[in-house]
Image 1 (cartoon, rainbow, N blue to C red):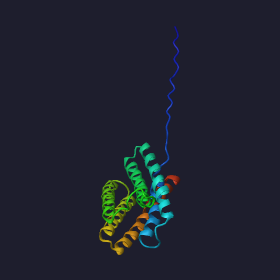
Image 2 (cartoon, rainbow, N blue to C red; image 1 turned 60 degrees about the vertical axis):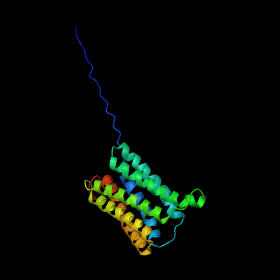
Image 3 (cartoon, rainbow, N blue to C red; image 1 turned 180 degrees about the vertical axis):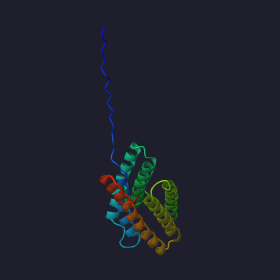
Image 4 (cartoon, rainbow, N blue to C red; image 1 turned 120 degrees about the vertical axis):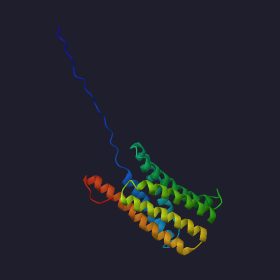
Length: 195
């Protein structure tokens, strides 16, 4: 009796999802820039700042965060979705009183709002100590930015708000640098910019 066997064919299907970190970091930075220019006093609050907060800072970061979750990146999921919803919250804080759906937030309420985000950013900064230096710098500045915004609302001092705006500008550029570095390193498959 002759026994014939057929070799088993094993198919491995891999799904490689694109890295969403550049999108999340660039949307954070590019939304911080106009918000910080407004905060520093270069121009008043306008539709451009709110629209950036809703769409690029808000929705794009949430999308990036969800993709990070699918890639099993808890830090990226937590950071991007949280800051995405931060921007949507800021837009709602500004829009809801205009629609007559809620009272305007008091300075005390905004102090608490920014203080909570400062604490959250600091905790994320601690997590970045196991990640790259560029992320550490970005999250350290983000923490300082929120601390300054909280103090500005607490003290009602315009010079603190202006300094917060300048800090936000530096943080925005740091976030964009980190996102573009990640993008270029991925595109060229080598270290083009240090992160």
